[in-house]
Length: 304
Ligand code: GYE
Image (cartoon, rainbow, N blue to C red; front, side):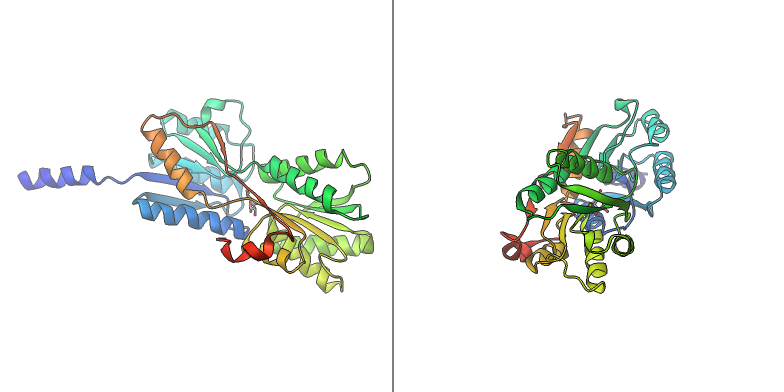
């Protein structure tokens, strides 16, 4: 009997923290880095991470969260593909008393008590940094095409809105076309090919909501016999290593950083929540910007 109870005691002491993480998918290099950060940090801390890949479909993510509730995980982390559609499943989590951390992309909800807090980047600020850089550093060029991220995602919504708000102060700058490339390289290339076919040399500037689409656009521009960075200015977001290299090479003019490596911050936040400590309702990561003034010196130190 003594043996049995000792085993039970040891098992209880060793009960690992279980976190359910509903990731959007694997649409970009940013996303892969973010997933890696969440997984390696969980391993380091001995956390049992249940990882669900939404494969870009909101229904998959909602189903995953529902199953985390049924499995009674300790905490649920969601990187929401879209801003809306979350209320019902979040109510289920609340009823089961499972705290929810929204990460990376914000949501819109009618009931702010349905999640504990948000950790991620300020996408509106990123869009502002992009448009302000453009307004300051451009030459006489004014005609912009926009490659939008996933429709309905906070990242696309806010980067789009901030850029448009900024353009309103510079009436000569104009978006002549705008379409979603779904944050992926292949779709970014496809959309850019269509833009080039439709507008030809009228395109002077590309604003891509992420680097993968910018890198896809570069392929399309080069295949059309044009020089990215010279014939067409490219402005982008994320600052993945490959894009910072493209800035150093003169193909991308600027990429605004969006840091995906915040697994440690997520688990620190979870620790505090479980200890009953107060956490910030909205906590933004710090982001910077890479252009010709700093890209070459910094590219080797980029971690993603
Ligand atoms: O910019 C993009 C990714 O939500 C910040 O999603 C994220 C965005 C990121 O696929 O590359």
